[in-house]
Image (tube, rainbow, N blue to C red; front, side, top):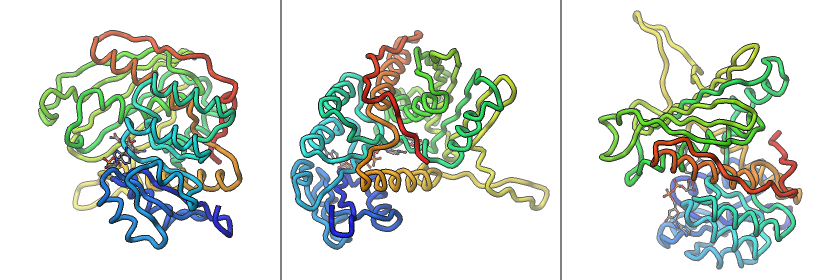
Length: 345
Ligand SMILES: NC(=O)C1=CN([C@@H]2O[C@H](COP(=O)(O)OP(=O)(O)OC[C@H]3O[C@@H](n4cnc5c(N)ncnc54)[C@H](O)[C@@H]3O)[C@@H](O)[C@H]2O)C=CC1
Ligand SMILES: O=C1[C@@H](O)[C@H](O)[C@@H](O)[C@H](O)[C@H]1O
């Protein structure tokens, strides 16, 4: 770590999320600075590095992780590149904040789990940022008080304005519903045991052959039924909503009613268009928590176990989508290293 204990971070992947995290570390978060950026698109990395004093551009993650001025790594490359970057970070004993998904499938997530276990201590925080969102934290605190009684059902809606180019049906599960998988496990403290995916007639606004929307149902080991409407070409904005139905009441978040206007015989508000705006505070808190913990020599927040468990649910979800059947989730036993997961706050 640099003098005054400033954490020197290499950001791997400088696309939409990576560039936003670089800005966040430089301008929002305290206690860290970006000393290296890595992208297979060398020009993109150079452009980002040129705007930051003392930042070097690389096209090879291993070269950045060997640099003397790198103490920690933030991985924001696409999911299929995460395993290699994580294993390289382990070789260099570097703490990591890894964007979701940990890896794109259960077998590769298990390899990362086994590699971290061999180290005998945690190095990775996984970027499930909803755990740092003020509304989700409020919901979790309320559930923890027990005032509402036992949760029975959890309803979720997850809508995007439009899917990025090249998206396919399984990406609704792997890239979007992945967040509801994490939130379900975290809010309820239960594992997901089976997934079913129902397929409404696709919207005329979905690209050819994309199954959009999808209606995904999870069963948990605590007997809770969870549903997720995922609709990535809704055309009107970005919405993430959740309602927990418990024995003695319900609680709901995500209505986005920060301001309601009344004017000329109408009432209403605006709808946020993008996750970068909706979850801006959550990303800030997530990265600050990672920097603070890393400077204390600790690892907190969503773990490799959480990333692996979610990868296994994704795999079952994609099978359920393709086969049109209910698919059980298969998990290895939870290793002792992951028995206590510290939550933010
Ligand atoms: N937490 C959240 O809400 C969100 C998380 N994500 C996650 O963030 C990650 C990045 O997503 P986006 O920024 O949307 O993608 P993007 O496509 O905008 O950027 C990815 C960047 O990584 C670079 N890259 C590709 N392979 C690489 C490698 N092996 N090493 C280094 N760089 C490489 C690409 O050239 C590109 O610049 C993904 O894991 C994605 O799932 C994305 C959107 C929201
Ligand atoms: O991770 C994300 C995107 O990749 C995904 O495409 C969106 O649906 C999610 O809401 C966002 O948080």
